Length: 193
Image (cartoon, helix red, strand yellow):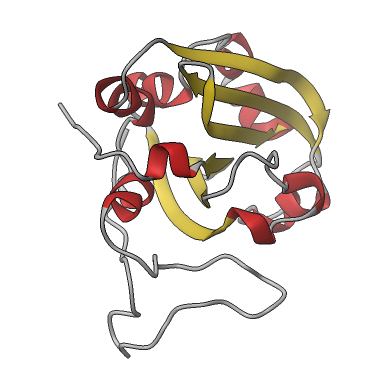
């Protein structure tokens, strides 16, 4: 998987905060530093770092995995025009039974048709599969406080931290990933390989 570094803090050219318009809570840069910024701003393999950084067993529970109509808010975030029919996977990652990450992945039918392996992920981490494919690139990452998200993309109430929205592309075919991080994880020091 190709990775890209993302800005954190103020806009790199103007020095101003990069907070988006009121109707769009997503920010292009993180308004923080420290452990939380380290977790949110790193495009690397999340599951492996969670295993190394937290003690106890890590479980990945599948809440939903299958074909579905994509919410309008998802299709609006995709680059270009794609089918609103596609695939949706929702998981929770728990350490010692405590929720640390809740994630939703969406792919339009066009992406799913070209990459049917997505439907066979099961409890395997998405990041590992993307890394193995090698042709997926994370082309955008944005952030917001989890508490401001409402409707179909609202995280569980126990996701009291920050959320990250990532756009991956296989050539021109998109995959959209929403990850909601809890303070139980964001306060931990991230240990990398």
